[in-house]
Length: 73
Image (cartoon, rainbow, N blue to C red; front, side):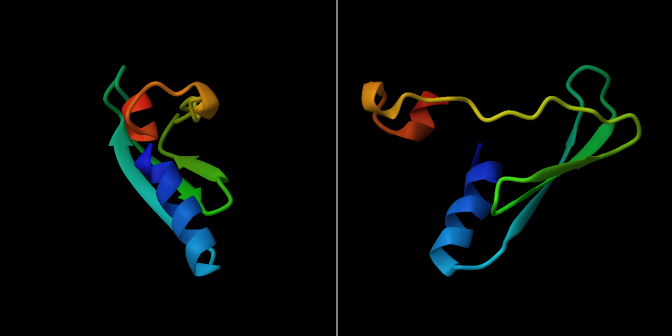
């Protein structure tokens, strides 16, 4: 989740457009993949045959019982 939050939060704090690149691998087949996320929460994926499902979990902050939002993920 930090890869999504970092460019969004830092972009707002700095009033700048930022991006993060995550190099990973498919948990199913092991093929490498790349996900780029910018400060507007737009994302791009790359890698041969790479079509990951990208999502941000929905947290009801008013009902959060965990000590922090990080613990909810």
